Amino acid sequence: MDNQLPLSGIRVADFTWVWAGPFATLQLAHLGAEVIRIETENRVCVTRRIPPFADGEPGPNRSGYYNQYNQGKASVCLNLKKPEGIAIAKKLVAASDVVSENFAGGVMNKMGLGYEVLKQIKPDIIMISMSGYGATGPESAYVSYGPAQVPMSGLSSVTGFPGFPPMHVGFSYGDPNGGLHGAFAVLAALMHRARTGEGQYIDLSQWETSVTLLGEGLMAQQMHGEPPPRVGNRDAYMAPHGLFRCQGQDRWVSIVVASEDEWQRLCQAMGQPELATDTRFASLADRKKNEDALEALIGTWTQARTDDEVTRTLQAAGVAAFPALTNRDLAQDQHLQERGFFIEHPHPEVGSRRHAGVPWVFSDTPCQVRQPAPCLGHDTDAVLQDLLGYSADEVAALRADEVLT
Image: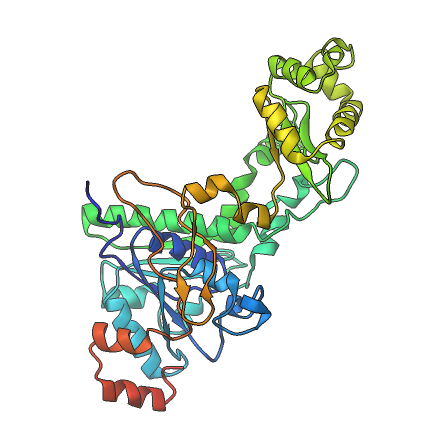
């Protein structure tokens, strides 16, 4: 067995912030890369300033949001508004394999850290820019955040219930989606470099990566001249297909029937075998035509039972069913616990807190979260001295000149 991590020996100079960029470099850290975040006290990362905070006490090192998506990384404080800060950044690039950033298009160029400059420093460098709209085009200079990607991609147009206006999907889908696309692109570039010795520039548009999620909607527009309708939790080829209220405060269960055999099983499990021969529900077409009545009957049955009871009864009968879980439910889920999905590394300021860990398992390369998210600037001295060769006196002088802030 080879226990070496897939990206062992790969160093990432990480200029990203907020969610999309850090989510990309989180995956690289999970895979064993040394990820060094370049931050600043003058403009603290947005995610260090938003809740939830440990014990309800705000602080740049206490955000659960930041501490989740920056596990396994190092943090260096660097004032990039000073020439000395840019010089240090370039030295870090020279010692790295990958440079990542997710500012608006052109920002890194204006700072003197664009790809054309960096590849002169390190010819085989891989640089990924994860801007909202890409590095070229009329909207390239616009700033973007994940929530805007949902309606702009068309996702909102197909999200919602019949007769209601478009809806948001509930969170900033564009951010983690862009992050995963970015991580995959970096892996592809690293494989290319391993074969050819060539670095490259990756121009990722978060808008475009969001549009790729709407394949069915785009095809419907192309094939039929109109987008698909909003159908709530329903499905064109399955019925019933939805969420049904159960006993308790805001408790729901998902039930999906994908075949006629499963429909028969559902009727039996509900203790209402006569529904299987009811002409309103005899076929998928019939059930779709009478879906309101179908859902009302199932809802009456589920509301008299707990979500756990419904789940166990239907799963035992071979019908797909599962509760709609809250965050608390997930944190206590036995399956996730036994797979070791959650981790608790002691953080120097907030102590041990439960975090989502690595979402995959490799048979021969056991990836794991190696350390908690860093406190702001925690690794500045170590990186400058041990990696870049600055003396302790030089570091002290740079700090006195407010370069390391």
